[in-house]
Image (cartoon, rainbow, N blue to C red; front, side):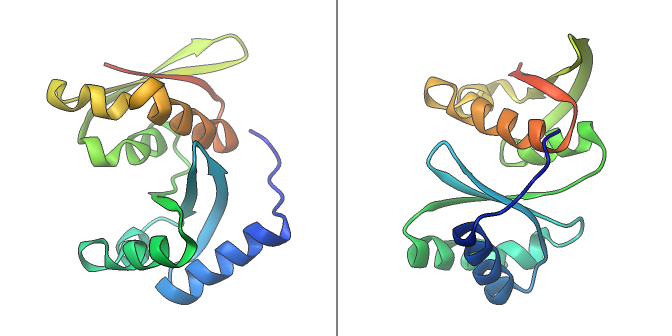
Length: 141
C-alpha cells in the first residue's frame, strides 16, 4: 500500500465528480489512459447514475475514459469490485513475496475482455489493488 497524495489537477477531478454525482470519492488517479475513481462502499449506484448516465456525462466533460470502482477494506472484495463488469465468480488470494497474488475467476466468455488488450485491464486492476491492499500481482482465469 502506498501513501496517497493528490495534486491540484486530481483534487479538481474529485471535486467535479463529487459535485456531479453526490458520491464521496476515496481515491482518484490516472492509469492506462483512464481516470479511476474509487467511491466509498454503498455509493457506486449514486456515482454511476441510472444506466451509467453520470459517468457518460463526466466522460464527455473531461474527454477521458472513466472507471468507477466501489472501495472495500477487504482485498478479495475490492478485487471482485475491480472486475465487477466481467461478472467475477471467484477470487483467490495466495502469498507472493512480501504481498499476495490474486486470481479472479470470470465467465470464460469474458476472460479476454477482463484481461484487456495487451493486459491493459490487468495493469489497471494491479494499480488499484496495490494502492489499497497488499496485493502485488493479478491474474484472470
